Length: 558
RNA sequence: GGGUCAUUACCUCAGUUGGAUAGAGGACUCGGCUACGAACCGAGGUGUCGGGGGUUCGAAUCCCUCAUGACUCACCA
Image: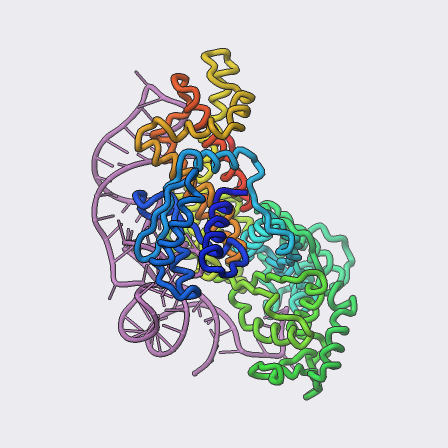
């Protein structure tokens, strides 16, 4: 059990003992680092939070709680309370050593308890197979893959899926556009994609193909390219699902329509088939089958697809561009009519990505052919910087992707700050052993360090007999490391990998601040050296795990 | 007209179920390498958290309202 969990449990038990109330789990107890070092090392606002429930003044609760905790925590912390209802903990060396000990093991992630495990399907990117991926897709790809990874890390069963929209009008448009090029005809430019966007896919085709065959072959080439680019961003999917084959041709679509009919929600009018959406609470009825060609609308396909998804997972997460937000209401109402709980579907709407280059916005338009692709940007900045930039802004906020900034290899670029901290920490550990290998004044070896790190009493050496600056820097780092699991959990809860990324930047900063005054390799003081190497090891463990989850590389050498 | 999202330092952005004096990076000034990696550290000041109202012990955070901006409200996908 982690130190936080232990402390929270003790607080919870104290509350239960004093007030005989029910507290289901320790997650309702918060722990924070006080914003002023003098208050203590950790604090909780539990008295403020429970004041309403307990109908007692927060200060009184704090006093009672404090008295109770003083006894149970006497080995690991001093406890005091202060108005309006904070409880502050000043940790003893033993407590710090206990935290440090937990991080010696590479396996630091606390998975969710088995009863909270969920089957989650995350659908993202889902670009039309009609051209290159643009930066909007890139944002979805990075964010989606990070979310998948976060949920997997916590122990959920996750399925990541790319929905190939290969069933509608846009495929015909692709076919027309590709055929124009294939047959060397003059483009009408009406209702066709600009030649420069797709001509690179209309190559190496055998002679004598029909328009339908051309469409299929070009689509496959485009898909292959999309897969390749996504892989270059470290984005891979468990499942690629074709709208045409698996939703339309498989009969799922017809079944779904029939189900709606059975529920008496469908009628015919003006040659079209309508969903009686008003009855479900929508502002107007919606067409399911078009009068013109008796083909399914996007809504119909989407309902069928989501029914198919719900058959495979209990919780669905979609990442859509903000321009699709109009679909949200009717989809959810339709799902309700299909006896699926819309609350189990969360749609994240990703706001626009604007590209800046040389201080000017690069306007993107598919129509005019001025589309900046993921491939181009990726080539310029690399996958790690690309991912970090995409993750650094909350989904709900417009993202400004400044190529000049992202390309810079200095501290204005957050990815280097993170990676440098990791490489620096790795360098110290490497160096500590290298000296040993060279047969110079060996003060440690890997096995010696391992043995040392197993004894909790040894680990206290990092916190005793050192000056104030070194002590504060060491404590600041370690205390924040202990929040790793909470940040991971929050990222999942808020569907916001940004939380985790910010946290990693923070501990990178704390590591750098620790590094400056705290010399680790010091043959004069072997115990301190070894204990500090353990702290550095702990930092590396957290950073490595965090970067791996976000699919950003953790280089030992830069 | 209806809906969704945003508005935080000069710039780009964070801000953990409402908590102690609102943060980071860049930009600007100064200091720190014969030094475990200076791609780093330390110091310096910057805010009507878009405006206004409300909820309460306490609001950047919750509610209402106004302003500004983006997106959206099709038998397109």
